[in-house]
Amino acid sequence: MKIIFCLHHFLPEFIGGTEIYTLYLAKQLILQNEDPVVIVPGFGATETREYLYEGVRVIRYAETSHGDRRMILGLKEPEGLNEFVRIIKNEKPDIVHFHEIAPGSGISIFHVEKVAELDIPIIITFHVPYYSCFRGSLLYKGEEKCDGEIDIKKCTECIYNLKNITGFKASVLSGTAMALFKLNIDATMLNTHLGTALGFPFVIARIKKNLLRLSNYAEKIVVIADWYRLVLERNQVPADKLVFIKQGLTNKKIKSNRAASISYPLRLVYLGRISSLKGTRILIEALLELDSEKIYLDIYGAETEEKFALDLREKTRHSPNINWKGRISSTHVIAVLSQYDLLCLPSAFEMSPLVIQEAFAAGIPVLASDVHGNAEQIKDGVNGWLFKFNDAEDLCNKLKLLVADPSLIANAKKHLPELNTFEKVADDHLKLYDSIIQNYKEH
Image (cartoon, rainbow, N blue to C red):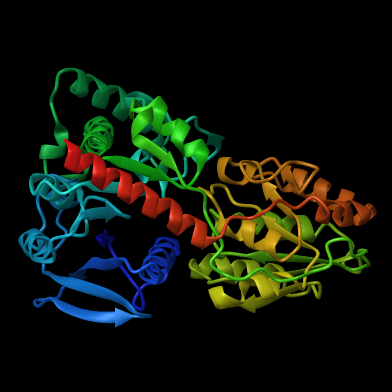
């Protein structure tokens, strides 16, 4: 069986969660004698080229588009689309699996549409919530957890907040934009900042329309978090199109003594990007309130927001119990986590964080913010603890509780769940591919 995987980037040039997921899925399928091929745009490249990455065949097609405003709004086809179609025709896949779709010069809904025209079955995985949320975090105005249902007025107001348009100006723009929307006057056709701002209701309407178009083109849509399946259903994506395939570990489990006693100082670890969305600031604020002799924190991760990271480093300059450890390889994560008592994940948003499963595999519980993706994996007081997201005081109180009674951590170690493996993830995909192809042939 030949399976084409489509996404915006791939290794070694770009390393992210979607890329790692696709790589391991492809490698597992190769082990089962299947034929996966990764296709990505070669941004700025005038010629298509191929290469192998860890045994996986990758085709980087020529994509010379300059992402202008109309392309970014999803109103204009990228120039590399014809080359993409030529490759699909040449490869003759049994199924095409899209792992990433967005407006612009990368893999877009135009690519999905062209594959559908070729009468090839399509499967789509939603790794992130941008398909239904412009902000991408499902946080209304960055502060309140959102149920994810697309509402033109509410989502438009949320975008204004994201663009730092607030107060009276936001009220006037919102009222005018909604009036134009009701009159079907699309201001995004004006190539100006004001036109974009007044056209946001149409941008939101287009997100909803494209979400339903994607669900129509796809035989199945895979979600890696069950809570997001419910979000899609709220937005009228047919329930029978949705398949939940749980995240799986790509690393081997580290043997650890889950019943081991905990002694001072408590060994706390953070692993993730050093950014505002990941909640690193509130974690540090909470640590600064605690006895430095009873708990220490090691911070691992890429500093993706330079000024933000510099400010935090300065804030912790005189704190000997807070240590900056830099980046680590994904293959070393579980081994590193096994050296600690507790992982803290203070994010403002998570889809389905693999690091929680990695912590469980390393034999340690997790203290995390109560956002959707964390709460789906953590049973509060059983295998970890949840605190109010974006609330340093509540996080501090939870840490004080654990510092006062470390036996709570030792007890939580006894109740860590069984974990999914990537072998199982690949098996689930293979069964799904087989059933889709068989059904496609029959109809």
